[in-house]
Every structure is written in structure tokens, then in C-alpha cells.
Length: 366
Ligand code: IMP
Ligand code: ZN
Image (cartoon, rainbow, N blue to C red; front, side, top):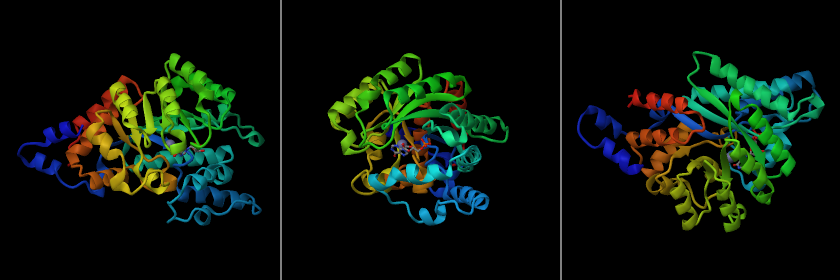
């Protein structure tokens, strides 16, 4: 990818000189972007969580949930695996606990991506039942899809959003099968694939082999959290996950050369989340040590820079592009080339890919 980008930028003329300018925040914000790894509940801004909390507190002054602005202070972005995952089960889900809050937060997440000039988004979420609100997993999925449809149908919105349903590593096989059933039932309503996510210390992932095999046979696209922590990166686990024939994988941190070669040989797209990996201490070192450098230069597979949980790590996608460019020396032309690579690994249909290729062909916002 780097080679192609460098070649396209060689030459003289004002356009080409501009292509070599520094990737600053203005440029990164105006760049049309593709987000392929974003968890819905982790993408809710603190401001939005605070709005939900304020509404709930007004309805019920005895609400036993702390104000998000105190529970997750605006400057707190550093976590580890022990403090990160409980944030959802012990806190965010207590606020997003009924239909109005789910709808309000989903709309807000879509609006935030739209405002950052993301033009294509594959949002993912784990179907969640809330029995005391009569919300089944089906109702939950329908509510999210309705928000996506509402957003996509508004002609002034330039962001097209699709949904991926996640299986959580804590799920049983039966729960995983239920996720696959829902993904199949609603594939014509905007669901493009399924994911395996959740606390990497939980397992074993072989519980889900048959469920993901069924998803694959049925033609659903598959993305997997892959080698996210040392505990989820044994040879046994990684080769098993590769046997599921994923179309994309996320994080891809603790991988040896043989596994890397196999990923490249198969052309599996990679979703890389710089801020998440640095702030949740998933990698050793800082941004300059991130494996993005390897995949961008030597990977020759599509790379989608992604946010993972922008509500938690507070780094919008435009900032991830600035970070990648700053720490790995990407020019504006390199960044555009990177985006074009991401187009090829979306789960959306060929027509969607062509729309995005055209967005970049006609884009000259140097
Ligand atoms: P939800 O699926 O929309 O409710 O988003 C929150 C869920 O996403 C969490 O409970 C986790 O299972 C999952 N998640 C968020 N970030 C990560 C990550 O970095 N690794 C694995 N799973 C994650
Ligand atoms: Zn993730």
C-alpha cells in the first residue's frame, strides 16, 4: 500500500505538492472516512450519557447511577482489561436500559460519526435483552436498525450506516446461535455480518465454532477480535479462528510471523485501533510502537483505521488518521490510499463499494 501511495504522489504540479502536505486535523476531518470497527455502547459520548442520566434523574430522583461526568471524568481515557469491560456491564448498560435511552444514544452515535465526516460506518452491537422493559434481543436489534434506517433515509446525511451483530465471548453456544439467527433474519434490513468480541480472558472460543460455521455457510460476513491480549493469542486459538474463514479481523496484536503470513496470504482485512490499544495498554509502548506501521508498510491487505470505543477513548476517527500519519510519516496521498484500501474490505455490497470509490475519485480536498 505504501508503495502504491508513494508512486501516485511522485511528480510535479500543485496538486501533487499538496498531496505531500502534513496530515493535520483540518485535513483529517474533511477527509471522507470509513469506520469498520466501532462498538455501539462504547461509542456513546460522555455528553450523551450525561443527557440520558439527566433525563432519568429527573424522572426518578432516587436513580442509583452516578453522573457520567463524575463516573467517567472527561479526561479519563486510560484503562486496562480489568477496568475496561466492567464499564459496560456495571455502568453504561444501567443508563442505556430502556427504549428511549437506546434510541437517543444510537442517534447520537450516528450523528457523531456523521459530524466527523465518516461516510460509511459498520457499527456493531451485542443483542441485549432487557426483560423488565419487555425488550427482547429481537426488539433491541429492531430498535437499533430503525435508527440506522432513519439516519440513512435522510437525504442530507452523507454517512451510510450498516450493522454487525456481536457474539460475546461469555455467551453460550445457544446465545451465539440466537445472534446468528437475528443477523440472518435482518440481513435485508441493514445487517452485514457478525463479530466475536468481549473480554479476551473469557473462552474457550471453540464453543462458537459451529455457530460461525453456520453464519459463513449462510453467506454472512465475519469479523473477529483477534489476538487482542496474550491470553487470547495462543497458536491454538488463532489457527482455530482462521479456520472460521473470517473476512476481517480486529486488533491483530499478538501475532507471530507465521500467522501474519497466513493473514496476508488470504488477504484478510485488518481493523486497527491505535488509541484503544495504547490507552487500554494492549500494546507495549506508545503510538510509534503500534503494529499499524507493519500492516501499512508490509501487510498488503486492506487496513481500516478504526475507533473501537470512541466514547471511552475520546479519539474520533479523524484523530486516529492524524495519529497514524504523525507517528508513521504518512502524507495526505498515503492517507487517501489507505482509505481506498478500506473500501475493498467493507461488508457492504459492490454498489456501496463503487459509491465509496467514486467519493475518493472525485475528492480533491487536499
Ligand atoms: P455493545 O455490544 O454495543 O453493547 O458494546 C459494548 C460491548 O462491546 C462490550 O460489552 C464488549 O463486549 C464489546 N467491546 C467493546 N470494546 C471491546 C474491545 O476492545 N474488545 C473486545 N470487545 C469489546
Ligand atoms: Zn472491538
